[in-house]
Image (cartoon, rainbow, N blue to C red; front, side, top):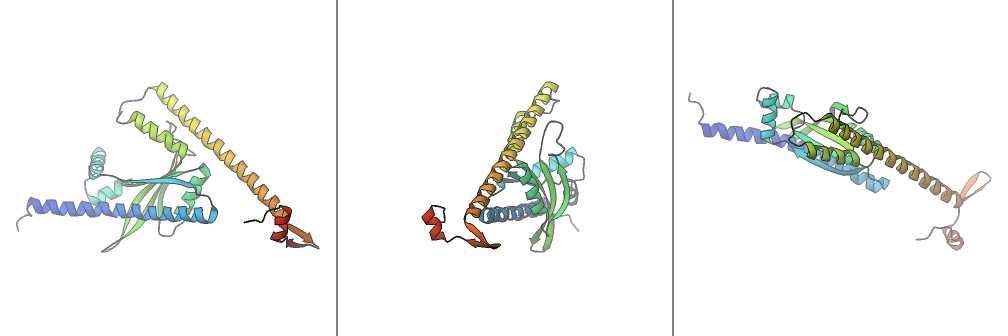
Length: 248
């Protein structure tokens, strides 16, 4: 039997690579829908949204092939799926460090996701000062021929961490030589400054929230009376008359 014509081989490869990448694209869509649900729920029910913004990206076929060649892996779809875990990437930027772990807990607690790996570069920063929480999750994708699974790398970081990482990438983009020690130390100092800012802003946020909670408790205390261990709310019309609130 004659071998397929080159054009037929090309068409098959194009079909296979398109379908392969579509699985990862749909996995990203699935994760972004989850994030949108969380954002809307927080905003509607808690009047506070820990997620500032998200950004997703899908590796190009060229980038995937280059990485496979650099690591000297067999070039097959099974090998790519096994060795490259960041084909689909999702970055979540949060307001505060505590929000990072809250978002991680909410996402990883969802029953359809399988957590494959967690790397905490916040508690254990990289030598250059890089901080972020990396989570690999296995995501279900429902194609026409049944369920497929695709790995998505989620990076969760604060605004300050993202600012530092973005500028670090621009500074050293396509610089493949060893960085001088003096510049490495300056970069680490900048990362430490960003971390100090994160800690300070989180402390301010926590203290302001405590003040607001105390004010709310005091206001509620003024709007009720206790008679023989029973609590009674003061009528709103009386509070209006006394200037104690309760207005529209």
